[in-house]
Length: 331
Ligand code: SAM
Ligand code: SF4
Figure (cartoon, protein in one colour):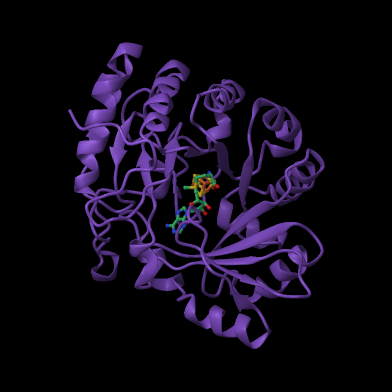
């Protein structure tokens, strides 16, 4: 069997993998027009992993040097045992950071509870600061609750909260200034994400995809300066401005350096290892999550699979691999 590395493992191209993105449910309460317009991520068949299976999975990954886990979905917080999932992750030896990506709908009531359970960092998706536009994109009229959630998170002691905003031509592209204002005096980082094409959103993509280059030029003209990348930052390009407490991140999946900086692997809600957001291969890990003593086999399977991590996606040629929508794989 492959020996178990103590630091983060590297793939066949030398990319150091530090970060596991785990979807804990494909289901969601929102119906974002570019993600789950029909309001269901449950096409991906099978029961989501149980808390015990998640615990074994994380112990296995932590043991091979992947010390950061981001919980995602679907909407992870729809699970009634969500606080227990955080607690289990935070208590797994070797897991240094438990992060969450959420639509923020349940944040206002739970920020403190999740923080106490061991959640370290938080990304909240907010695609518009205008109530009507938000409702048009998300399919639900919940902007007020989501913004309340952001405030509650800062009050609960999260030092910095990241806001994820998908750039959409003719929908929210005039709101960049409003997002920068929101973050000017607060420890909020806004990350603008280029819309990615999936199987389900092809027609929407054609109408609303906007290259991030235009935004980058706009930021540079306004005096924003690009920062260097930290080891487990991932593919975001980070910009700072002397007059703003909040930073800006640009996630540009169609740019050349996106895949070379990829430091993550993904596991779907049913325990399938995916090495690329838009890959064509999946490896089921669930059979190795049934007993604690299977851990070496789990780790061996993961390490062997890392060789399959592709050099890059083929989005530019319209190939989205096996990804119907990002809710199936945690975004
Ligand atoms: N429900 C949670 C949320 O919305 O934050 C977590 C899951 S969602 C799939 C994770 C992230 O992926 C969100 O920030 C969402 O905006 C983003 N996302 C979903 N589909 C996308 C797409 N086609 N292109 C770019 N980003 C997308
Ligand atoms: Fe749900 Fe997140 Fe997809 Fe929106 S982006 S439909 S909140 S999973």
